[in-house]
Length: 341
Image (cartoon, rainbow, N blue to C red; front, side):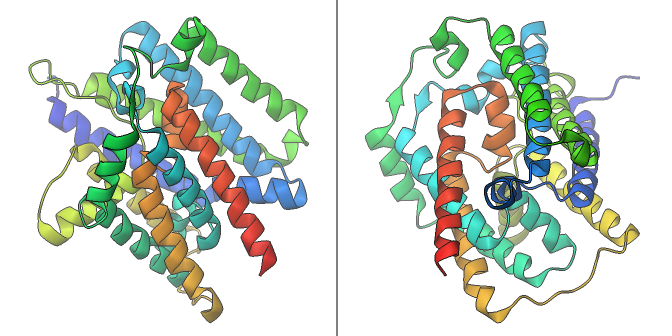
C-alpha cells in the first residue's frame, strides 16, 4: 500500500536527520575547522570533506533537476529577488560569529549534544538572535533593508548557469569534477579518507532530502516548494513551536532537527563522547556574541553554512555564491580578530 506524503515526510526526514547527526558527530564535520586548519596548519582533511560533500550535492541536485523529479528551480535559492545587501551583511556576520563561537552551526549543535556547556550557551544565543531576526524586534529592520535594496532578476536569473548560457547539468558536473580534482591535487587525500567518506555521506543526505521533499512527499493536490538540509531556520522554528506552540513553515525541518539531535546523541553515548564540560570563563563572551552573530547572520543571509554553504551552493544559485563568499570573508575576519587577542 502506498504511503501518503505526510508519512513519507515524517519518516524520511527523521531517517535523513539520524544519518546526518551520526555522521557529523563521528567526523567532527565543520566548515570553520576546514578554513582554520587550512589557514593555520595547511591541514586539508576538513577541506577535503567539504569538497567531497559539495561535489556530491552539485551532481546529485543537478541530476534530480535534469530528470524532472525535483523542481529545484522553485526553491528559495533560485528566487528572482536578490537581497544582495542583506545576504552580504548576513554572511559576514555569520562567518565572524562562527569563528568567535569556536565552530560553525553544525559543530556547535553536535558539541551541545555531547555536553559541551560553552556550545550550549552559543546555541541558545544563536536561537534567540535568530528568533529576534526572523519574527521579533530585528525583523522590521531586515524587511526594510530587503525592500530598499533587493533587486529583481529575470525569470530563472537565480541560476548562474543561465547567466553563463550553459546547461545547468553540464555546469554542475564540471564544478563537481573540479571538487574531486582539488581533493586529489591538494595535500594527501589518503590521510583523510574517513573524513572524505563522511563528506560523501553528508552530501548524499542533502540530495536525499531534495528527493524526499520534491518528489516522494509531494502531494499532487497541494504541491509545496522543495526543501533540503538547513539548520538555523528549522532550529528557530522548532524553538518557536516549543515556546509558543506555533507551527511555522514546513514540518520537514522539525522532523529533520529531531533526527539530527537523536542521531548525534546516540552516537555520542555509544562511543563514550558524551561528557559535561565547562568552558573557560574567559570564553563565555565569545560563545554568547558568536552564537548571536550566527543566528542573526544566518537569517539575513538566507541560510547557514549548511543551508547556503552546501544545500544552496549545490543549486548553483547567485544568492548562495554571494552568501558563501561573504561567510568565508567573515570567517577570515574572525580568525584575524582572534589572532590579535
